[in-house]
Image (cartoon, rainbow, N blue to C red):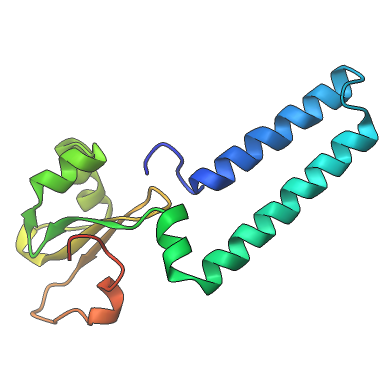
Length: 140
C-alpha cells in the first residue's frame, strides 16, 4: 500500500501503459500516432469499465482494490499487521506525532488506508467510534 501511495495497482499499471504508448508513438513510428491514440482511448475505456464494475460489485472491489488495514486499536499496536504491511514502529510514531497524539491511551485506531495514507483516530475523552467508520477495515 505504501508503494503506490494515492494509486491503486490498476491505476499504476494504466499510467505505465499510457506512458509507454505515448513514448513509443512519439519516438518511433510503431505504433503510429493514430493507433497509439486509439490504444490510449481503449485503456481509458477499460479504466472506466473497471471503475464501474468496482462501484457495482463488492466482490470485484475486494478482488481489485486493497483493503484498509488496522495498525493500532485502543492504544495497542497490532504487530502482525505492522509486519504484514511493512510499516515500521518509527513510521507509526511519526504518524502519531503528526496527528498530535501525546498519549497512546488517546488512540482509538490507526489505519493504513488503501491510498498508502495513515489515518489516526484519537480523542481525549472516552467517546466510542461508530461502526460505520471502521466497517471496511481489515482486522477490526
